[in-house]
Length: 366
Figure 1 (cartoon, one colour):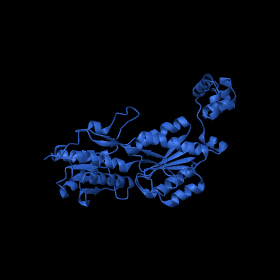
Figure 2 (cartoon, rainbow, N blue to C red; figure 1 turned 60 degrees about the vertical axis):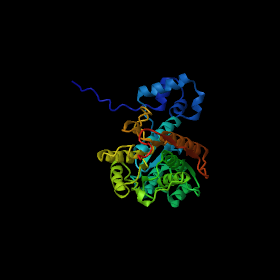
Figure 3 (cartoon, rainbow, N blue to C red; figure 1 turned 120 degrees about the vertical axis):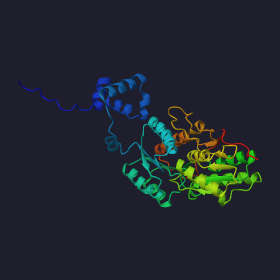
């Protein structure tokens, strides 16, 4: 008995085989599957027929072949301080939602909380021939020589999180000073005059602006701004739950007279609330507590999955529109890529803070 011949692995479909099945030309298939601008010239029925046939045949695009043919990669790079932070999760989700619609692919670089890793991340992305870069360094200032390199290779980029007056590039920023002002005003109106602060390091531009805003708000209400004894500064890699617990203990040991603590993110605040609960220090009766960011654990499933809503008491905080920031930054970057513009200008996008008042703040106990 002769063995049946082995037909070998199935050949992947090509644009030509999809075109034949859909009754159109290969160039039409290419336009549809690559989301080219001329795709709008085809009827919805044609577009859907091509996509249906491509899916039925198991077509997978070859990004490398597309790059070599067009001298364009269709790739955008997103460098972030840490991919393990919920803060960057939301930024990344907003960015991905936009680039998917725009027909690009997104690759990420992780600095792992180490500013010196930025150069390595950028070099790796340039090796992938990215068409644009979003640099979200978590409050760390980017060295001028790195920006000079990007200008030299003519890759459009947008800086996120830190805007300096001398910046020669497009920036996306959250108004951290105004956010600090809102926290300071809220606590001052309640009657607080001795306010502790737990924040990231003094090298972190965002934290510095929030503290400056809070201090200025207190001065407006004739309240003394917090001195160094009232301010705890953590490293940028150590601003989570454990740090909040530890620094709260340290702050109360050296400044037990405070009536409120302003934490520079929600995780620090929740870690601190755990410490206060263990020591039977009631919130807000003995100490008012504020957070920052209004973290959303899964905005894709439900934008109301806010961490601060589900702790006891619910956390007063400042909402940072992270998803919108990621989306809008990519929209700007794609526009810069398509127009070959590098936007040598002052900041382009500034997002305003929103104070979310919940249960963790009240007038100080007398």
